[in-house]
Length: 328
Image (cartoon, rainbow, N blue to C red; front, top):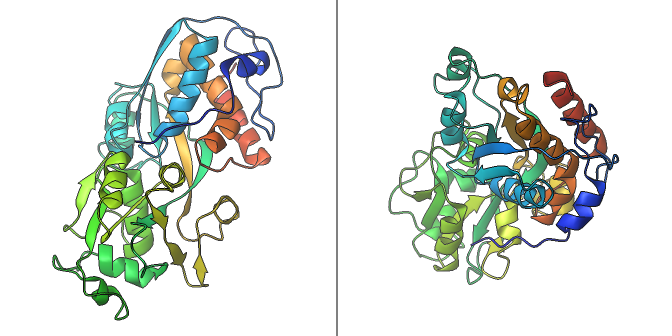
């Protein structure tokens, strides 16, 4: 299971936390992720979050720190996958959807359902992720894979009985044991589009799960296994996993903070989002306060759990977009 370290304590955050829901001034962001206005008003209520398992560690970290300074707000965080989360969000069942891809605006269960049900939203980027391909540390033959090789493993025409030497003749004659996120996962959508050229098009011969910890356990327990998921799950399990370098056409690049942040880890670097219900937030001080807090501290907490903080100008734009969508 992913274990999240905490370099930021609740008291340190409380000292710098600002909230605009009741004070009339919105949250502000600086490069460190700290809030600049120390004023804070207590609020009460509930906030429900679901969606991406990739974004889940950030939302969990934010929730933990938020509850320390706003104990009157009950925040729950679940992880049914980006797509599964959007179905609940657009049905009005949750307040925020965590997403590792943008909403599908023309999809009946997503954008169309939101419109039908009067659910309005704003897309807010909270971090940068590098979708990480991993193998077992005992796998001595795979150090770098091309997109074509990944398509051999995860493409729609990949056979059930695939051996490693089918991927590369220099690899051993051993079965490829495939794990991958479930079909409701935004990570699954992103990977299949980047590697196979079309979202949702993939092999059917892999063990799938919406829980990334299941994928971590599967690869850690089998020398022939391979999977992919968010960078944070690799960072927290480096003793059990080996990251594979990816050749996106310009040579082999390892997923690191630097390569993900500057997009040289291409095409598997990607933005991570939250989607708050702006119609609800307009009249809900607790939800407004939570999103204020999230944006103000996303940079520090995203880095704390293993992702890459967005640049200061991008962070500032998210605050501006949020303020425009839900005037403070």
